Image (tube, rainbow, N blue to C red; front, side, top):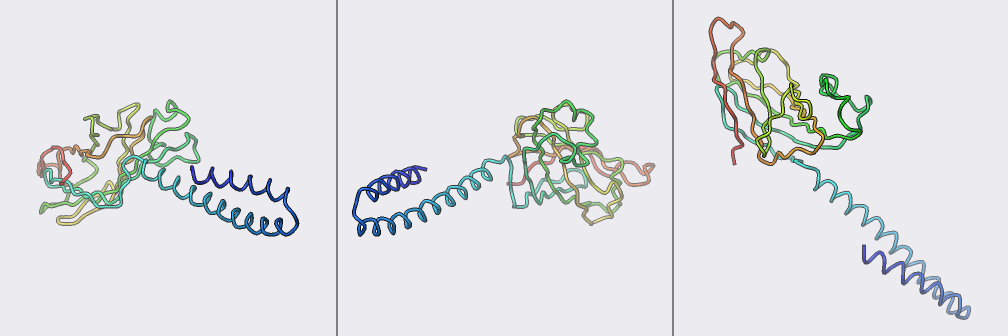
Length: 213
């Protein structure tokens, strides 16, 4: 930003000098001014790129690296992507999360939506029934995001079907909140796991999955 300001100052000074000199000097000044104009344009472009990068870096929780979590019961989570963005509270921007969130109308004009995409592996020798299974997110301050919250809402979008033994399914956690969540070291709280035939009893205990560092 300082370089940009100095360039404008130099450009302004040369314009004044060019107006006071002779025709030969004016020609030289015009050429110099043209070069400086290109420099200013380049600095403006460079400044925009830097601002874009800063905005990306300050977006909470962005990652392109896979994150492994400890196994709980018979399930293993791997987070494949994570992104937080500030969105305007209008229907054109809604996802299934907003449409399922009863408190969306009480959210401010701009709120934060975090999307945590994951793979969920069934490590058991029986199928896992997702229709009777629930998971929530616990942030760095030990605050839980769940479906009953009015200001820290969670929507777990998955197949809601059966996950066969030894296979994985994909899904996404959607977090809706007034402020950007603190999730540099979040946890996943999971319920008991059961097969389709509930008479067989549970096949996995409830617990909290933590990041594997």
